Image (cartoon, rainbow, N blue to C red; front, side, top):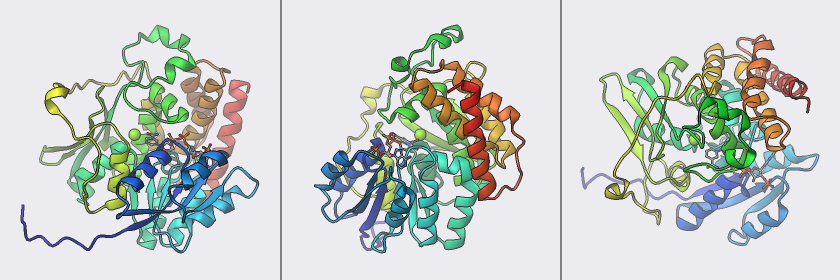
Length: 377
Ligand code: NDP
Ligand code: MG
């Protein structure tokens, strides 16, 4: 490596965190405390947890604050996302509530760092097109996509043969199919390798999380669904891989901590030292890989269908899944009812090709109503 390579002057990113009280929000605040010379928090939102937001604000006294649960919640989020002093907006809101603020941030010329995969599943084309038009960056925070982003380093998608997303397999990786019907909320909330918010933890158990991530990758990296694959890797150390057309594979590895991808999104294209634990390969000893159980976890095939069909179908999959996960968490449906509901609602939907944002939003709202009817909630 050349020692003479000139480093760009250090850039301190002024960051707004939408969803600052959640699991990603908490990791992002930790990164800001760890590398204060590179990351300053200038705005933070919570949905309803005002106490936690104010406690968090003690470390960042200059941050503007917003609560999004009121009737004008979206406007409050848009105000934060377009703050003149901000240059990067981290979307860490669970579900699709981050879509309008994300589009507003792009229009205001801000880069966005996206943890909320749901908005890319629902409206990936609209988000990426707007970002290209405004010349702003969409930086992936989801660990798999951040890993792929690191492996690609801006290479042309024509040099890519396959994007290989790794999946932990969730808590039921080895559970016989017949037992999945009696899975409890408590069992499903026990993720083997990551500690995350409730919705994504259930998505990891059904593998809808990985299904959403397949569609997310398709838009972030401009590759068609056929080139997006999933491999189960129970240790969650290899965060994803890229196979290039010369059959070489690059992978990104680190300990399982969301501070890694958040920091990279903030300091990109540079790397800076931090206090995160390095990998100890001797202790790790082994890394395992196995094929996903497609027949027992239909989420992956449903997501592939949605991603291949495109149009409004990914929004329908995402919306029906959100309703079904909420019903499962409220103990109003069984675990397999999550994918059964998504499959049924998708089956009833006629996808609109080349859908604009209005068509996507109305498909989203139809799917929510229909999923609730199917579930009887
Ligand atoms: P959490 O449930 O822990 O946090 C959600 C955050 O969003 C909280 O700040 C919450 O505020 C706020 N919020 C909830 N509902 C709304 C709403 N309707 N409108 C605006 N804000 C809302 O979620 P996570 O941090 O786990 O996940 C956030 C996103 O990041 C999800 O899209 C998830 O898929 C993605 N992600 C998460 C990972 C993780 O490790 N956790 C990994 C990769 C992606 P309040 O506290 O007031 O309720
Ligand atoms: Mg992920």
